[in-house]
Image (cartoon, rainbow, N blue to C red):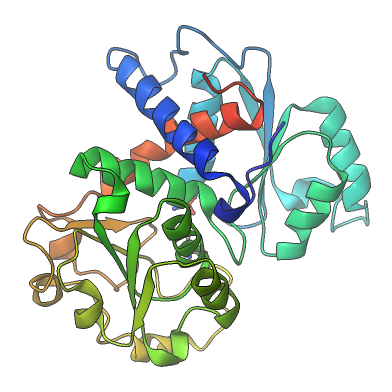
Length: 309
Ligand code: CP
Ligand code: NVA
């Protein structure tokens, strides 16, 4: 069995295998309805438990569809419905119960340590469905979308990120090393990516460049990704933080510096870091990006249970 906790913890070979499997499965499903299982039903009889300590629309539904299409089932837990946190049941006991009842566990949490604590005690694979420092299922799916739309390997494309330095960007930085692509980051100086991840990337010969200018970051870009300035775990003065980002908005003026057919992605939910015109415009791939979560998560589930083709 394999965990899927951070992009940097999964081998290059496995990441590529997940993407190949997702493409194959997606192509085979053209005539299927949403809930119809894939013909091979590789996870028949398997149960995925999902636990959300933070809100979610896409991750929740796409994991539901993913496991159902693989022939299995899922149950979703909210923290206020179980004893963990509330009545003092420990992570280790919770993990043992999950290990006895289920086949795979997905956790979205506010607390980075909780991911590692569960991973220490649980006997089934665990997937990070978003933590303060990481959003690996999102980024692997975004790489799938980029290669699908651009019809090229991501290593031959100029990738840019404009916006906050957050969990999604951390996973993108890790992916830039695993998939060997150039990543230009545009953010206010105060919101540069954490030193720890930048020095890890540099030490491992990552091709990442940080600019405190949105324009410099997107020159000649094939793809621009962004995310909300205020994340779910952000305990900040919203007005003050947003004021730092006023020159980091994805709009018509900014994308003129990128390639004409630049692809714009946003993992959603969105704030005002992207104009409506761009979000709904011809360069946007946001809806395809959201749907692809289903396909890539199917292959992540298979990877976790050693069932990748
Ligand atoms: N992009 C993403 O993870 O969306 P949700 O928070 O709705 O799951
Ligand atoms: N960075 C965002 C991603 C939401 C999917 C957050 O953590 O809230």
